Amino acid sequence: MDESIQNEEQAKCDIRDFGRLKAERAPWENTFRAIDERFPSGAGGFVQKSPGGIRGGANFDSTHITALARFAAAGVAITTPEEKLYIRPRFADPALNRLRDVQLWCEEAGRRLYDIRHAPHTGFSVSANEDWDQLGRYGTSPVWSEARDGVRGVRRGGLFYRCLHLSSTYIDIDYSGIVNLCVRYMVKTADQLEDQFGREALTPKMIEALDDKKGTTEFEVIHWIGPNRDYDAEPMDWRRFPVASRYLALGEKLYVRRRGFHSMPISVSRHVTSAGEKYGRSPGIHMLPNIEGANAMRRTTLRAGHKAVDPALVFNDDNGITKIATKPGGLTAGLMDENGRILVGRMPGGEAALPYAREDLNDEREIIRTEFLEDFYKILTDPNSRMTTTEVLEVMAKQGILVRPFAGRYAMEKQYPMTNRDLELALDAGQIAPLPPAVVEAGAWPIIDYENELAAMARAQETSKTMRFNEVLTGLANASKDGAILDWLNEDAMVPGMAEEIGVRPSYVRSPQEVQAIRAARQQQQQMTEQSQAALQNAQAYAAMAKGNQLAAA
Image (tube, rainbow, N blue to C red; front, side):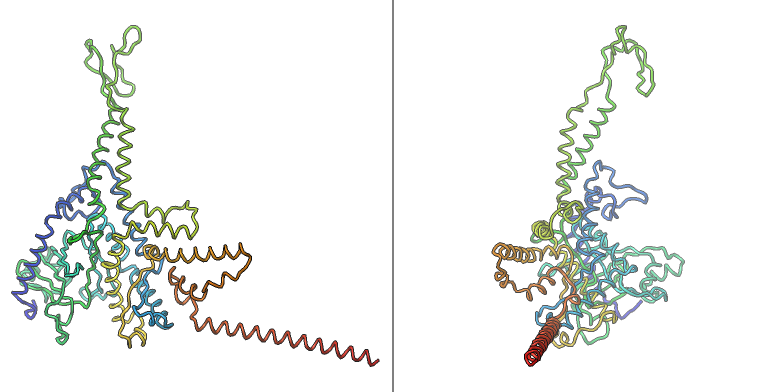
């Protein structure tokens, strides 16, 4: 145990913080438990079951489960598509963005960040799907990103991403409403703690458990990550980091590790919040009454369908009959009179109302699917679309209204801090080229844009307007048979502007200087061609004149 990092007052303060955050979230947890029961495919951290226990036994309708799966898959595909370089660094100063070396650095940095993030060992793809799944369930989802440490002498490198279950993570916000504090509650064995921190960092009870060959003994630990109130850039210890990181063993009130970070390693996004809310609300929470209603309707229609296909039987007089065989091929005597009339009938079971019940159930299902944004995602996945590119952009811009409540928050709370941390770690590790001299001189730091479908929708309206304007002018020029009206188009400004709007890589577009050089060379070539043609014409004319003079002299 490291005595230099122990602080009894600080430990008491951290434990008080943990208790306060637990008490603040307690009212939410009844809702989260209801979500766990209705969405049985997840970890179910708020509903603890014995090993092998089954959740979701009360479900009769699975619409919300399949809707959540599509919500998560489509959310990942739209925000962090694996098939597209979606990370686009830029700078707030437009003058810097116009510099060619800055443009090329931004393009290469975006490509390297994408490659680093989507390397197989990082687990980003798995974490991203779990992140969106958790946003669809609870409305709040934390993701931890960090550089890998070695374990017991085994060298590991690169980053890793891990979605943390909300049941073990508590959050707090700063004065502006941004999440700035996370407290993780963990139960780990002595063996696990030794793997993570090393034997020399463990508390006396943990070491005692290891010495007694009881490495599976469990210990409660909290990980406190938040603003470092003792920040001091001079000391070479945990005080020099703006973000403090403290692992505290609750039972002994002793610190196992005290370090820090230059940036927050846990990014917490919330789906939708109202004013004053700390935790987000999800489509699952919004639709919980409808999910309960759809399950009740489905249960009723199942019973009605069961009665319709296997009805109860009625007859006037059993006439000594004690048993009726209803199985295939069964024989029952006495249920037909001498005239061949069957003396038994089916009990009416309400089967006539089944179509109406199914219609009501389908209405509830449609409401649930709409809340999980299936209408919006169909635009991107419909293989039978016959719309033009312009029409697609316009529809996407209109449908983008549906995602505004959470799209901006997801970029601000999850993608922006996570990517900035990735950039910081990559620059420190030499995985990305240093910032250009002009950027260093200006003291600037990149802003991260995301070239994904949500970002495309944000720019779709401007691109659509430009394309419509071009179509209108072209139509007028064709109608008037006079191309002079096209002089209003500033094509030299439109080309780089639209290239930026639709996400074309800077290296694919020539710089203004290169365009000027090409045009100058083309103009020079045209002048040389014209001069050559003029010289040839003059020579031909001179030869014809000389021949005429010769004929005249003869």
